[in-house]
Length: 266
Image 1: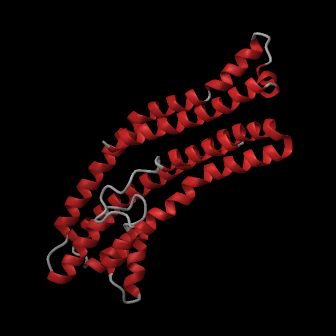
Image 2: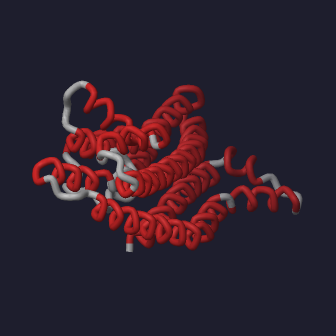
Image 3: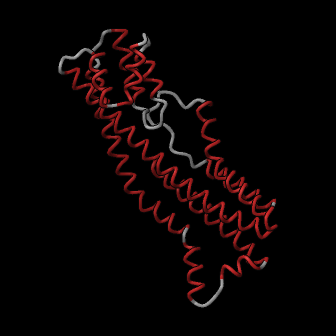
């Protein structure tokens, strides 16, 4: 049981290092406060594994603990993978909104709209700019609100919009050219990101399929007339194989996701 708890902690550390990529366009590195919010989420899979292991141990001793560990690893890694996929999709949608909003804002400024009027119009179709509009309505600074919104995943490009807006407010310089350049840059980065995501999709799928191979092995065992589950749950050697196999399978999926993330950041 102690060994399984140690494996759960090791899995938490591995998952914690496989967090979504950091901000690419942020003006400043993430603060310690923001980093501190990530670890509770990263530790949830380990907590689930530990709870499942402890519950199984209380119900059926070592055998129950191993079964709880195995089920917990599979369920936690699967949930973590789904969560990461959803988070990546959310970041991609936010980047699309920022790029589209910058383009629309530049187009409205070229058409002769005042900056604040153009921002209000853009906020109607791009919700990410709505906070800046709301901040202006209560007497706050637009640049401050945009910089705060840039702290959200996928919204890093708003930091450059905030900087350009602040320069315009202080010096009266035109912001249109800066927004045009930023919109082109964000669209180019978005296309590169889509290409990288497409190229890495096969790698991610391969890693996830490899994590399912033990289930295929069980099916093959029954196909040839064996009883693999009975052996894995009915003997000390089988329980050891089950615990180690579940741990290695989960670690393999996490590791493949880490490698794909690292390749995507190159």
